Amino acid sequence: MVDDDADARRLFVRMLHACDARLEIDTAADGEEALERLRTRPPDLALVDVVMPGLDGYGLLGRLRADGASVAVPIFLVSAMDPADQPLGSAVFSATMDRGLSLRQLLRCLQAVTPILGQPEAAAVRASG
Image (cartoon, rainbow, N blue to C red):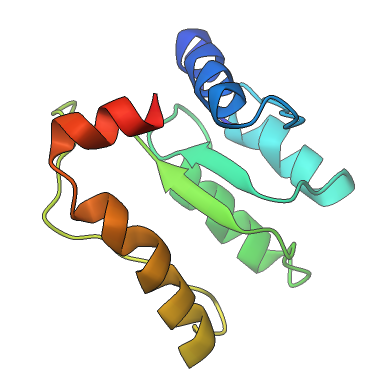
């Protein structure tokens, strides 16, 4: 988990452990620290805050891509705020991969996310937390 806000990092760690206490979770306080760890000790996946001072989530992705030796780690960009400091909300959900999604991957993603998106928001929050 990469976030410049220590409280947000702790919250994500607690939420992830609530889902599976066996998870090994490492955190980084900024994009530069995360970049070094992704290069030297790649995790199974990374949750990266979009809005951070210095190297933000998009900048981190750009630096990894510019390396030419992209790390084969799924990276999920997350944020509670947009760059204009407005609460984040979206009518769109998007998933992309550098080399594209195969039909099998797309169908697996749709099967996984459909039950979650079909729940009323209050029920979804109770189920996840």
